[in-house]
Length: 277
Ligand code: NAD
Ligand code: FES
Image (cartoon, rainbow, N blue to C red; front, side):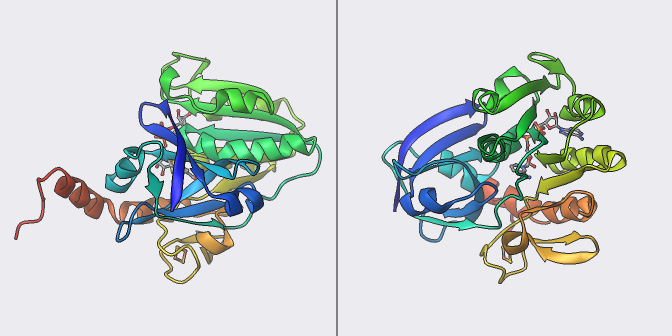
């Protein structure tokens, strides 16, 4: 059992839980994730390790409440426990040792960008972060990223920072030259747009994919994605891949596969089951 030591609301539907998981906190690397099951028989969901404190034996999980399972998780209180936290899973981020990196985070994906930017900064890489959200209240991890280097915030409605998508600010930064690598994490259309934007510049672009995952160990095939014409299992061969090679259309299609089941789970939770018996 993994006790929740602190809980913080980061935006209207994003919550941070700091959870006791000493072994994971000690060995995790940027880019890795855990698979969490709140209780016996509950759905298993992959969550990025947004931060870790090895001394206190805690990891930070950032959860966007979008379905039945994520809503159950964010309803947990401090001193409640999560039954299973498996990990760290996946391959660590490919980090450069020197030079300049551009880290682009969209919405809740900014929580995934944070450990990458932090590790790059600790190695002496010059980091610029561009983070985006629909409006002011939805910006997350800004203070943490500012500790890693220049940080440009963008909002769709212009209520904070620059008005517009992250791609607008990221393009400007790229055009000013000197960027050796781009890391982009966020909604699929955002990662696709960033990859298309960086392609003509020839700048290596790493994206973190978020397909449906079940076992997280390469056994079920649920997380398969197409990268450079080859099938890859994101849980064991990713979750990060070369953004210029990812088939984003297939990823978006596969993410839609379970929408009907999710709607069903939601309706049952509300006592209004959609399935006619
Ligand atoms: P959102 O839809 O509010 O978008 C956040 C920001 O991304 C926007 O403000 C904008 O700057 C940028 N963006 C969105 N669409 C864009 C486009 N077409 N072109 C350029 N920029 C664009 O984000 P949200 O609601 O926080 O994100 C939810 C999605 O992110 C979910 O689908 C979730 O599955 C996904 N997600 C992905 C990862 C990952 O590892 N890739 C991690 C967490 C969440
Ligand atoms: Fe089952 Fe990746 S989650 S193979």
